[in-house]
Image (tube, rainbow, N blue to C red; front, side, top):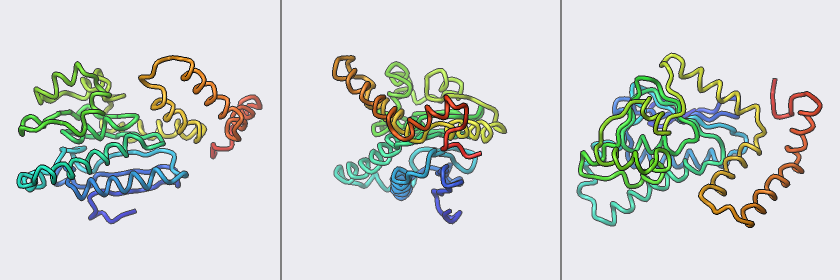
Length: 265
């Protein structure tokens, strides 16, 4: 566990659940280049740790994330074009690292989400938000565009919604975010921890390798033409996991009406 003075905390529970906590509440968890670098480092560490089975991205304070820190943005006003490219590449790398983590990722959102914070949520597999949460793609208010987050936000809510919210920068509710596909469930504030905990427990009942491969399967298959090459690839994938030690254990446990060995009672 890191010091509470750190603006990003990493807590690992039972060697299986990683909690990445934005810890800059005085600035509504707005991030700068230092926080971006720290998040990238933490996400990479989690990706390499085979014992971690679930990651939860959450925040301390009233806001989940207000996007970019204003003082940092002020300093960037004097950056050259190439310095801006370098800076944006760091943000793009952080988002890509989060998006491609090989394990289940959950965004636990307790308050407002602006700009880059919407990008963070869009990169997670599951998003749970409270009724007091609201969302805003606010970049155009500052004469900017949501460029580095756009691949993930468009993937989450679609072109039609982005054609509106990228340009209007209007706030929308957690319920609207659910309707758009950004949020999975909208819940009461005092039920957020329990709801996420229940989802984690469900995930831990599943085969660890199977969960990781199921996530990779989505990236491998999405958007591809259904042809003989894809059919062969998916057939080989299911065959490989059926004969794997975990696949054999899962099938034997099911037919023997017992828990598989990855479930710890």
